[in-house]
Image 1 (cartoon, rainbow, N blue to C red):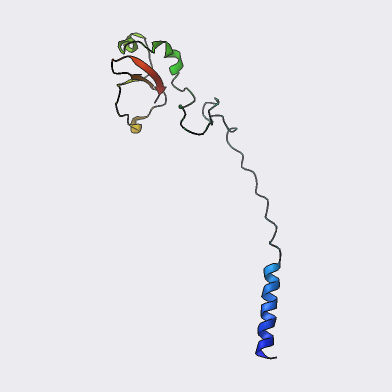
Image 2 (cartoon, one colour):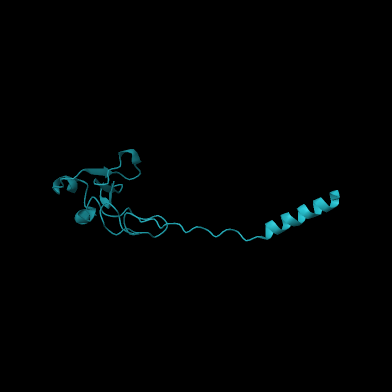
Length: 121
């Protein structure tokens, strides 16, 4: 056989192989999550999945129980009888995430020392 016939045959064989259909993909076994989507696996409470910047949820430190302190002076924290860890965060302070404690209640203060927000951490 001539060299041209061999190379033409090889070209035809490669062209046919390229047109062959790809093998069927193997089904992937579904992964069973530890908890349904939108549920915190540790607490079982619903969490917000809205994209963007959100408040930390769930309320692990039960800060909502002390929402009545909002607007009061920082001295109200000491007299509220809170048995959990607390932290007063003055306006403009930098808070380290190395010390993060999801059960601690953070009291965010304004420039006058009044409580303006509560969060866990």
